[in-house]
Length: 166
Image (cartoon, rainbow, N blue to C red; front, side, top):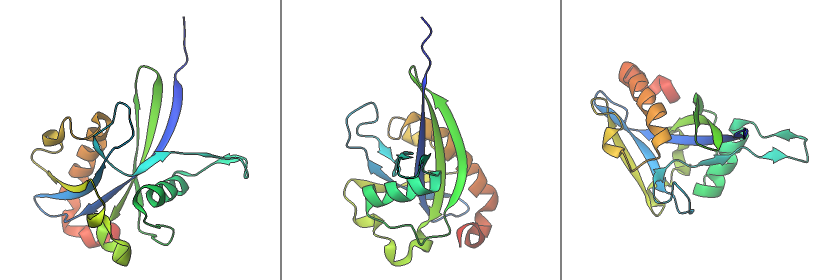
């Protein structure tokens, strides 16, 4: 029997800080919803919704702004320095999942930056030598690929940190 896999579009935000010659940090929060990712440290984000009033899907940017507001309580509507870093797809037994991975530096959040006070959250240090290998089993498996790519990008461009996001 041939079953077509369901396509799921997800938009997520990677908050970064302390980009330097050794590595950088990313902000994560513990997943509380039951399912295969329960208890993993992950980034705020979620499914791109259909906007029936407008007869269209949300854009990835609209979705990530909504999800960050719902999950973290940050209103990113006025933050113009977030970037779409990568579109990353992977498959499970039943789904094809496409992640729209956005990044924003903690510095541009200014007074919005309340990330350190959010329960069950922490900054993970990613170093350029080990990449995400210390977090196998801690973060969702699918996140290792795009985080390792982000690491390589920052390694080559960390000296331009102020230009990357500001």
